[in-house]
Image (cartoon, rainbow over all chains, first blue to last red; front, side, top):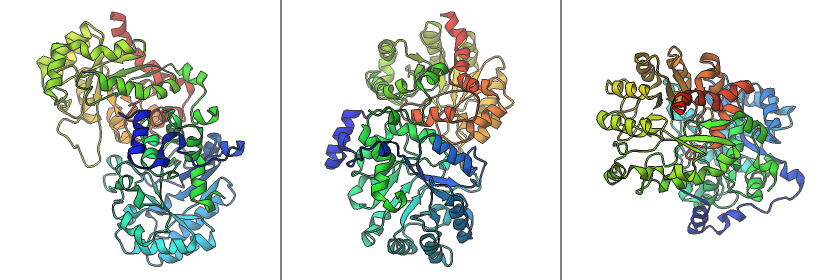
Length: 292
Length: 288
């Protein structure tokens, strides 16, 4: 089992000098304001299709996040999973976020639908969203699909980052008539060779991703923490990746937000700068528009 | 270190202490304790100590392998048969923290009965754990369970049965579902059973044991999915829910978060986090 010394050895062995634990953080803002900032890069609004959730009322979710110290939450829409009128999905999302200062809307785009390019443009120009969220496994395409690099190119031109929800729910607990495998990430490094400016965040991933063995090939790829489990799972993930790649995400309200927050610090492996990096600084550095 | 950052998501230390947390499902080196019988367990307990301290846990119960064929390592199985005390080192190191329930192998009834007598009758173990995978797994409706349950009941032992309801069906021949545990429990109405992981897919798991009043659900082993504890309290009552941490392969956040983040009363949280488990253990602890 891995302890603090093992983690240090792992970081050195990986040849990523920047991954040495005490210096995990980017140079962090020392101000008290920064200390208090928490950016949750992974929440969803509206209703999960398969059951009601205790926090699926938007005000209840915002109040909970606020009570936990979350100052900003990047919100996608559960409606984007299955609904095909994506323009309406994104309009409702933008409207829900408009008067809630903590929420930043992240629109849905489904490149298997006719006219998906319009949805992408609307995210940028009509709703002023900083990014979009993809659900390839719910929308029925792989990352080998030629529409995917096209989408990334348009996102780069529009100044949008892209979040890929690798999963939404453990495959073992899904509804038996709608089993959805995790997104296969293996094509991603090759795709990104042709779109190197793209910025992608992988949500709800597990450590099995081959990207973790090839971090050098994925300069624009970031990770969230929502389903990274094990008492030292998040420090291990950080140690395996180049500096600045791990961003706090809760997957609330599907998952309990307290769980995600506790996991960041529970092992006492990350120092204060490291904690701030995960909780806010990495998100601010990587995706400035969303953090503004 | 900034205290604000290191306590995020947690209740105050006073509140956590007031819960008197007893963890029914601690899994250091769950599959194999190390060739010497304990080194991997000790390493995993050390790995978990920060979370244990932060959560203000009072006790944690883990599941030692005792040489009845629950691993596939013949050298280890023989070692623990010849020198059973090698498994006790973690208890000697943390005598006030650790509790134990032995892993049994219902495929080998004779050896399991011997182990029950060796470890429950003579101590220090408080119950048994029936695994859902590996060499010792057997579906719990099998009649091999009957003599084992009878003897465990004689000794006031606590029973934890691993369960999952997996979408698509079982992935191993020895797995058990909550419905199968309910079937076993109906044969022994005076004995309490712990349904580990509430079946994982807890919406079905809770329903499967709803009419089995001698089955309690254990809370660990799956993502911190919102609504689980609320449904459990609504359908079973807080008195039929027992906290487990699954540390260190799962986390304090995931597992404690399920309870502290649920919309239930503080009294219900106290029951789930420790009181119910202590009640189950009371008879065998009283006998010691």
